[in-house]
Image 1 (tube, rainbow over the protein chains, first blue to last red):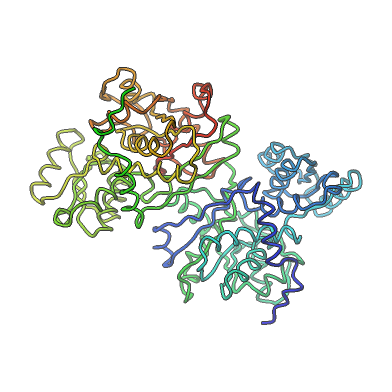
Image 2 (image 1 turned 45 degrees about the vertical axis):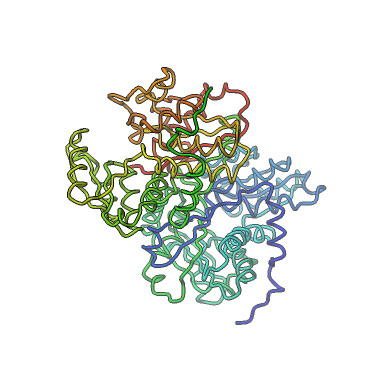
Length: 317
Length: 317
């Protein structure tokens, strides 16, 4: 396999820079272990708990890195993004911490509780039609009026580098992992994980997990080309999007396999971690746990110690 | 206030010994922080997460210390205890780890899920009448037949020393706390906390919390003598018992104040930590959170940084 490191959107230097940049703001989340889960998986699992991260998800890492990296003259004009989920809260909080305006475009159909969370972090909310065009036009209009800079949810070098800091911390604490698994939606977390993990632990195997009802990454990897996700059908609301132009090449070259659990397996994994590990994770995070507990994963050899990135804990209650 | 350290059941040396003894078996649990909770409390809170401890509660610390400390000739004859809760699971697991028999006396009325958990750790279960006499007679009978040694849930030097390791770890990680708060039932956790905390951080203030419906510690402290708990009425099933002969003097001399939240405040605190911190705690743990969020606690001066021991996460589902 040929790897064109130089052409990727981020490298290990960018991940290390991001780690230093977000350190004053982000939680260094704990790595939890559980004998009960190890028994079920048949191997040692190390859970990197990004559900305990600021705003309840790893998304704060990338958003914080991107916002804090802006030159002052750009930052003063504010930031704009579109998101109905964790990225929206992450950008709003990062902007509040920097003392600049956050313009968050959210679909009219987004959940009120998510809008309240964004407003709670001081974000200015703009409701748009729940379409690609509606989102795009609203963002452009805000950019034109305010001069604010666009920070998208995943397909951006600073976002990828920021998300890579979760794997960086995990491997600093547990250096001798045989593999890491992370959920894949747009691919920001997985691509950052690839960059960080292969640099720190050469030979480490990288796996991804996504719901069977939104399995574009698995199909893309099988086809060797980016296949967009259409009509996703899953409870994993953080994993509906297609891969990005920047995240795809990194994933294509480094991810060995994408697991695609069914939603009922994912829900069972959520319950299991609440009961046995006393932690709350969201479906988009639980998909990784469902994957490592699957028969398919159990059949893989040479995986004694596996890192699992629990991406977030924001469930509606 | 006169303090008769020499007469206490445990000292800081015993806590340090316990820490070394249990280190190969117990989790070193993380200390979590939350900006949202800090805002609500009006101070910095540091949560020592014993809900992530083996068997889901701090009880494993004391049980493991007591079981591992037994001389071989005693250990081979096994251990007996009575408990319907976390101590039962803790003794069963500690005995399994040492490879000796655990005889667990549980009331007939105990929850099947708790009995299953004890059996899952390899404990031998003996059902008794749900009375003091039933429990006592069954334990005595087992001791007579097996020669096993009794390890009670809290009123024992090795249990107190073991429970003190939670505060020891907390203060090793966050040395400059102004106060620590822990829940009080029989007093094993709070008395161990007193021993560890006052040795590591002279001048630190120790608080306790218990439900309004089982407020024997508050009444004992007010009266200056041990007042037994009769007819407790609370959802905090881990905090129903009276203080012990060994735990009471330590608590009497070191605990500044006992807070007594109502159960509805405790339930609200459980929900809050699930939503904002993504962790599951049991009511007997949430009582401390309800206490630090109370108006009464808010009115205390000089408390910038407060440690909160989250004692366990075992809720019935």
